Length: 152
Image 1 (cartoon, rainbow, N blue to C red):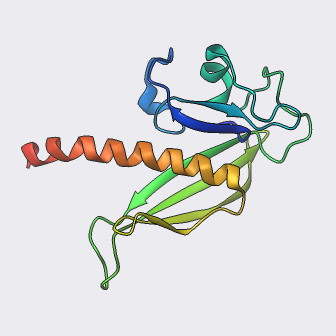
Image 2: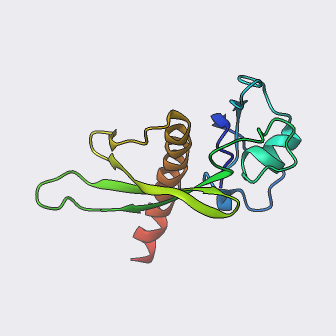
């Protein structure tokens, strides 16, 4: 559940997370804040670790009182082989939450072969979070391939 006002820009491998692969975006990210009145501000390392990458940032001084969402969750499912002549695709499911309850949900779709989004989110912030989640997801899949080949 990443903060909906967090604009990730690059992977942040030096964070203080015990299990970075379990983070909502699949790893830690650095970036900037897009909350009203704080657009473009760079969070501290502590804020990145406690708020930006985790969502539900009630302790964050930048979090606006009036907001649509507190956090955004993602999950992915891939079609590993082409079906009916279509390219392999990844369906990225999202849930935007407020007060720990779903407010909006849906599915975005990514064409693996063409490396392009077929179905995007209307909110550019949620779309950017999904892109970061997908990058981590694809990296994790790539790292698993050799292990699967050895196990097979």
